[in-house]
Image (tube, rainbow, N blue to C red):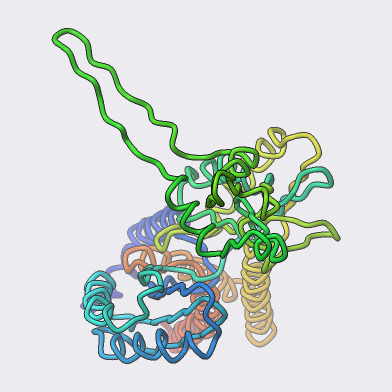
Amino acid sequence: MSFTDVFIRRPVLASVVSLLILLVGLASAFNLQVRQFPKITNTTITITTVYPGANADLIKGFITTPIQQAVASAEGIDTMTSSSQQNVSLVTLNLRLDADPDRAVADVLSKIQQIKTVLPRESQDPVVVKQTGETTALMYMSFNSKDLSGSQITDYLTRVVQPRLQTINGVANAQILGGQVFAMRIWLNPDKMAALGVTPIDIRNALANNNFTTAAGQVKGDFVQSSINAETSLDNAAAFGKLVVTTRGDALVRLDDVATIELGAESADSSSVFDGLKAVFIGIFATPTSNPLTVISDVRKAFPDIQKQLPAGMEAAIAYDATKFINASISEVQKTLLEAAAIVILVIFLFLGNLRSTLIPIVTIPLSLIGVMFALLALGYSINLLTLLALVLAIGLVVDDAIVVVENIYRHIEEGM
């Protein structure tokens, strides 16, 4: 007796097994992640080195090239790209899919440590950052205002909005883009400096020697302990202006004698605009194991509360949402899946001309497609464009098997069985 004979002789058992497959498949379908593409854990390592005042050629020759030569032999490297710009060197390493990210980062750090003595003394230490998962944001939020400056918007986002977004489950990073950090800008006047005999080095030394943060310590007695708070840092333009740069006999040359001081943005090299207004953006990056659709759905739920708490004059909007394309793509494939099933069933009915025989593929197609969801869940797959397209192709296989079964049944009936 063959395996199929058991289900032929016991139709109740066949019905129970089919219902079990249907229930297990439905339960698995609700637990499967919905993504645009299969989950791929790709890791990139970026090495950023800042050399203030250096041009692109100098950056390339003395920083980018030595770093490239050092890390080229690091373990797990697939491809390497670099860019040399004014003041900044950026080297990006793309790891192989089967590489160990932690081991690769340790190897890169070790090789950079070996060449630190080769790099220019005035350059800053290279910063190594590892990023696993998507390298592009799933969503961009824009914040703009007619009344507030870019620095004020950035300050609010850093203190209030960014921590709120990063607490949402599945959000790996809420990165501020186009932001302008507050900084004390000191604009030197060359004519006044030349008249008073002051050089930029004098001003730099005066700032370094008089504007710093220090812990003065404590005063302890037998029964009393007091902390000493030494206010050694300057926090406003007026305080910076009173800073003594140098002396000329009995006269003191202060910073406001040779410079204009104001609180402004740390850098004005770039700016971002949304709907004609200067804006600051926040990019939402998801963790590698999270479901992008669920993450962005949770972010959208929190967005109205963020809008209500914005300061007067500030507006927020969602400038880009990648999940719209993901949902549209998956909806189109699901529509194709239903159309394929309907066309196949119609063709079978037209050729067989028997509604009772057509019921077999009508039952087997959804039962097979839903039942395979358990296999997808067990293997760690997700519902994405590739798996849905595979299901579209699998309809043909299911129908072929159903037609073979129906034809054999007809043959046996015609033989008198």
